[in-house]
Amino acid sequence: MTSYLYPQNLKATANLWLWGLRDFAVFSIAALLSVLALAQLRIIMPVAVTLCYGFLSIRLDDTTVLDFIRYAVRYFISTQQKYEWR
Image (cartoon, rainbow, N blue to C red):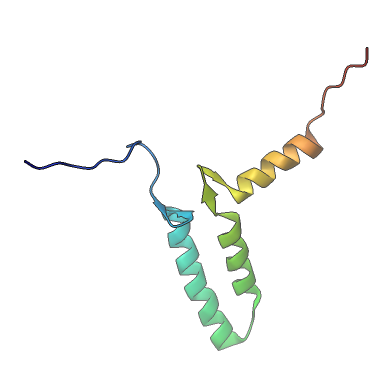
């Protein structure tokens, strides 16, 4: 008898370590290109941008760090909090 193991949520997005699969592919290609740019042209800006992208695309519980920052800015800065004094 053969038994199969399925994940709890079959419609969940595929994750690889802390990133979504698409984010990990973009991060890997950008890291390769930025290391090549650093080695050949001696510019460090692509490495910094790639590391920032890697940090901002970390995914925990279907929320990225960038989404969390957006929610925080929306809550604390851009939307008005309603206060009632009685």
